[in-house]
Image (cartoon, rainbow, N blue to C red; front, side, top):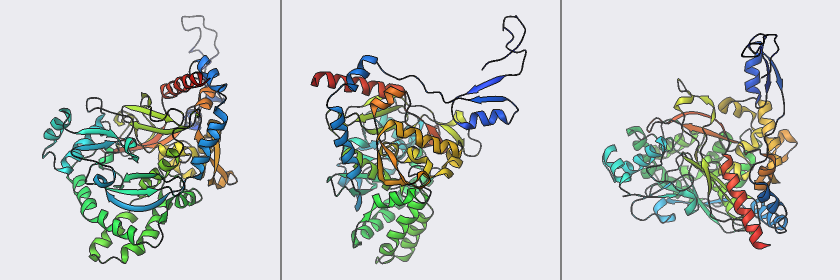
Length: 477
């Protein structure tokens, strides 16, 4: 901020004249000031590059990089995704004994945030491993439950991402590369386990999903003459106003359209079928748990390509944010999770929001979600900002990515392919960080969802990835 004035006091005239504000960022900030009559000058400022200059140079000069990135990108763009089954998590994820999967990089009970603790407690109650909250907390604190990231078992989970053995999981397959990926079923919005809620309403819903919804979906999916092409549904969503992360209305309705005939044809109690259809139809985020493993399949196809700087995973556990890259395999590069900025439900405010949480940033890793906000300008009503912000965000993400995905076309940009394949080197050179739009869980365990907004990874993730990739480049030279 700069001011004009004649005073020579301790403040040098700082308060003598009206403020003149220079704003760098989304329009919502400068717009709020203008509404109060403040003069604002908007500038397109970019932060300095990140990481060590020597590492950046080593990576930029790596002779393997161009060919490696072409290989990684080709695998990502070629990957498909079809729904092949719905099965209990214990069967497809090898969850023996007392094991719970969670979102983000590895985590201990001691380091877990409020919503993660709430979801873990709720899962223990749901599985019958504890009969009270206190018993569940003691069990988790004693190490009586094994905690493991969803990503370590080819799975993904939104928000807390907690998946227990009795939950049912979508089973998706990549017919091109042969991979498989999994995700539990979406509970809906509000007070749900993935947001850290664990009251009786949550446990009753989970029991119904285990006993009724899961078995019905399994029978319906297995009876379909052709498997559901989930990648095709995701592509259509972007042409119907969804971006595939926080807005899934069109995708959920298309999924309902595809599943309804098979569900209606089942030899099952009509009340159960009606309840299942009503639940799917009333859950705008039902498709998210199909979209996430679709993105997971594509990004997993690019794993273990020496010399590639492409990011294969962005995930958060509510305490740390972690990334993985094609050139460094399963190694995690982490930093402190940031708290999203956005819009809040009811009387909730910024002080109620937990730091960023969830595997759903796999959507941005794939090039949709926050990267394709231009396809869904209505999303700004849910996460904040303006329509110009949404368009500008997508345009900026093209500068951080290695390719445009022709399958994920954005109508308002002349059907330009979504910016896909985050490049660690591009992030380091520009200092710009990937944009994610996300839900916000309450900081206190048991609260549930408090809002939705925008967030970016911490710089430390990309600085760590840059250093590791540079070390690999030097070793290969």
